[in-house]
Length: 224
Image 1: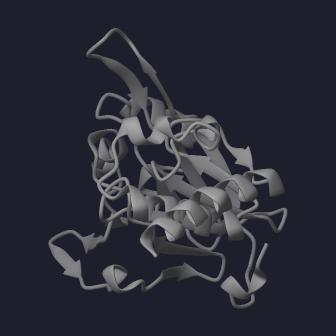
Image 2: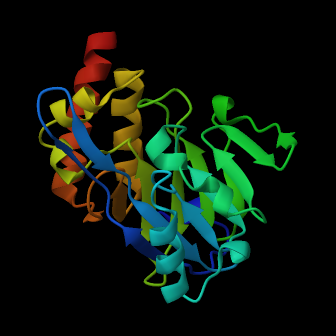
């Protein structure tokens, strides 16, 4: 992990409450839900709240972690698609960050994500802009109890398999595939683990970094 990303980091507990998935269910139908992650530390943070039909699942999962919805300090939706924001309204004491939008109740706060500015929650958790899947995607970076850097990326990465097979994330939709390729490589350079939008948490190996480096390099060559 590149410790220069954080100033005197404390450690957070990063808990995947639910693994995301996506499978085609016929020609014109997909069955899918997003990963849902809890970060416990200086602040309680939930990242991506699944679909509107998952409220009881989330409440039960939080209860097993001895957390009530009113104890969540931040809700982060990596982007605004319906499977990532479905239960944001369970958390009424929390500040909400949906893509580049930061709000609490009727108050909205300007933040220059579009200029590349990080959003620091505490000494072990920050958000960085990673547009591509949508033009306002964010990734959550958290220092875990094992001192690893965990990147919760939403659909910047669909699943581990999309590294060798980029058609997976391209077919899932990308508003800017060039930026997405660049940001996939950027995150892989600094993260030890990635929690993707629709798959299981995976280790970032040197082989993973090399594959993404080659893909990003191809883009840079085309742009010259």
